[in-house]
Length: 209
Length: 209
Image (cartoon, rainbow over all chains, first blue to last red; front, top):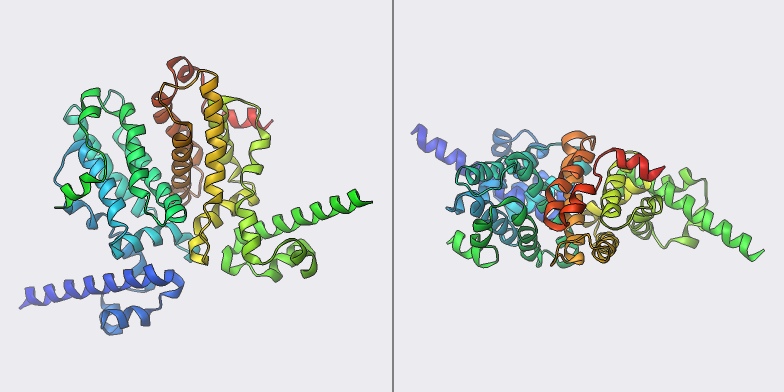
């Protein structure tokens, strides 16, 4: 019985998170009222306040859900995994409201009084892990620092998403990601790996299949 | 007489732009009312509407004033100029309200219903010009595309500013810019130039002196 109850609680929390993400994605932070979120989730205020303290708390949870919409889809390793994360992210931003709202709230957080570097740091950590794995597999040039490169890739992806959003409604994002790897890989990977890494739209279908 | 009148008009426009920038910087787009801007400028609504159609028009003008707060300060050439632009930008973001409001509005524009890629494109164009100059001076490796690298540097700077704002209130921005050049230069510049380009906080004082 306890586990069934737990399962139901997890399900309720996920429903709230998705409804909040869809509402934040559509109306922005200030336009997304608690009532709108509850209506979309088909749940009561009691259910919401059991799981989240406030609208801000919900927004933080959405911001910090980004990696889990991507990472479980991938089975590649090392540098190829790092490349796949960025390509899958750029494609899924078109279709996944939880990811899209997470990115939007992360970028706009200052305007609603939040200053939370966790989403940037958790992405950086995931990327640094791929780079450490790449180092162990002999894929990196000497002197490449996984933590530094991981943070820089997060910075570049953040900025290319913003440029792409106003320049093309994000339709050119995957090309921008591809360009980044064309510019960065020769400076961080050993030549045999630069030649072998696959970069481009095809990787997304492969890795998400 | 006509030129004195013109001069006064230019001065009024600049006063309005600066007052608007300070108000946007402090209150964000939605909190920056026309009345607040006029009060700060010490000017009438008539003066404002002679120069700008609306608050949105003012915001666009602030967004598009960024390069003029940086570019006139520099006298270096080629890749060194490109590096100096990014270093000076990262320092002046701490102190120049016109630049800071321009960056903030550019990043938040979607939340107030604007979709204007001009600020990203004009920065990219300025950076591509430096890279074309660098190419003519023999500073670039074969196959480096000035327009591509120019856009990528703008993307990376945009994202590092956002990460830095929530991670450190922008105090670590200049180190992030320095890191970018350490990662990028070996992939785009010829070895003699990689060794000669100066990157770091000292460049800012030199180039702004």
